[in-house]
Image 1: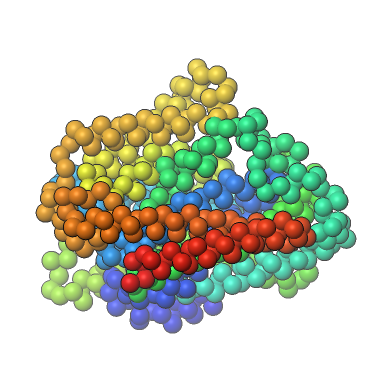
Image 2: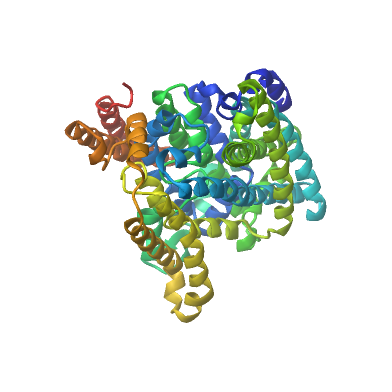
Length: 578
């Protein structure tokens, strides 16, 4: 089916680089939104949720629920800007926002850093999760499972390179329906097994604390009677810092990566906002509960699983409690989720290598006789780069042993970068040296913290995520100093950028009506806060309905409705839908 869709959109996606990487900037908002959700629904996601719930109860999901705050910030403050910029890739922004050779260097460096280095690590942990499923489901050794994963990747390369983003987005929509539908079926069947005994039986067999939605703050890190128990420092890291300070795929501060790609592919600014808002709501309200229900059931069904084996509960439930046919459907759902993520990562990474490295520095467009010949050459180059990324990612997969280790590495090595990615839209003084410093410094600070500080500091340094706060602090100080010591961006470049994007914030030398702008920022701020409350309240109301806690469900539902009304009222007063 995926291959057929790729063939169906082949002509549309091969017309030009814009059609190939951004679907000709004509993607409907709902397709773009579903594509974002499908991409973040990887083979590793249900397994990760099962592990979190198995160790810390429902409240363990705050390790990723906190990212909604940054996601909604992107929706209201940055989605319009990405669409207005009319760029082909996120990195193209570098040379329309900054000036000088440092801007060119940053663009080329990040093309390799994000397109290859970070990209293959993300693909590697998704591959590792798919290998785990194959191993548990079929009893195939990991040395052989890598070949099966390689075969699936090759099929994904074929259909994703046939039609570019159009093919990726269309297959995402189909794959998401299959994956989500099968997840709901599994949750329904598993919870009604004799061992679990439905929701009432589950509540009788598990501690009450397992069903709490909020972590216990102030205790030592770890789990406490089925409830996530975290230190104050860790809580501050999750709620107060991580969502804006760290670069993380799919939750980049200010938008970025494949999220920015989908926003830029929408037909207008309104669609870019709508698609991102839909993504945030679906990501945090629709997807989690089928996984959480299976994870809770797995605690009862597989009590013998050790802490580092909890994630296996989801796959074992598939294997042991689904009848033939449905078992195949859910395996197909995992393949669909896997292929959706891989196709996006390959398309996204190759777009950086082609547009921001190859086309910009190696084979420039002016060497071709016309634009048609140039586009054909670059589309062919993309297919070669896509295959190259696939091969590198397969090799890296053979060297990776832990998914959580890669997660931690990426979060820590991007700590402090997020603020620059946000402020480059809102403060004219940010320059290329600011971003270069904020990109490189976290690696140095994190390495120093891990190799030295954790050996000489008390145990509380590790418990309270001292390395994270240290890295954020050092990185922030470093880029602020560098910004002040280096020259501002060329005024002509900044004026062109401001005239094109019309960003809010501190652009006094280049703007006209400041009063109207700050009134708009106030409305956007209210939209942001109300959308966060609406989404969290909907998430909790759904959970309370599932567990038949009707009075609490009514409170959360009322909060969701009230927040939604505030959002609706304020969003009409902004310029989002002008």
